[in-house]
Length: 124
Image (tube, rainbow, N blue to C red; front, side):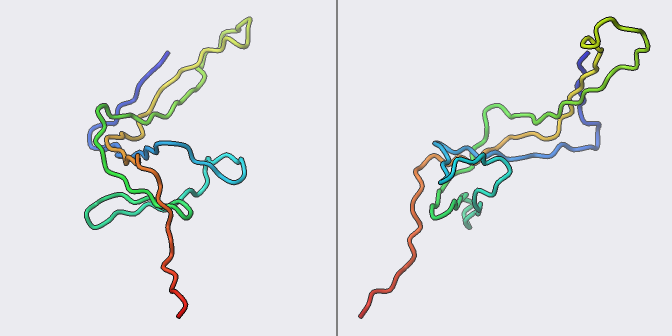
């Protein structure tokens, strides 16, 4: 049985954003990037997103998504059925989904990253 939970009136759903990077993120060592610090996200005075990753800078733009995404959390619990079942793999489970957030906008970074070069003074 599947049940969907919709937030009750007065309980607002958070609005999240999404980063859309065109290309691949590569590291020196092949390690998973999940949960790792990748870079800094800033906004200019004209609300242009700027992403700094290492010694590279990317300029992006805020885009409204055609179809918003819903962020769901899957909840499973066994039903309180006391009958004896022949196969333990066939336990009845009740599945529900809770809407955690809605994603309506994304930050799109589609241009190639530019290297950050420090201003080095010339010798006299």
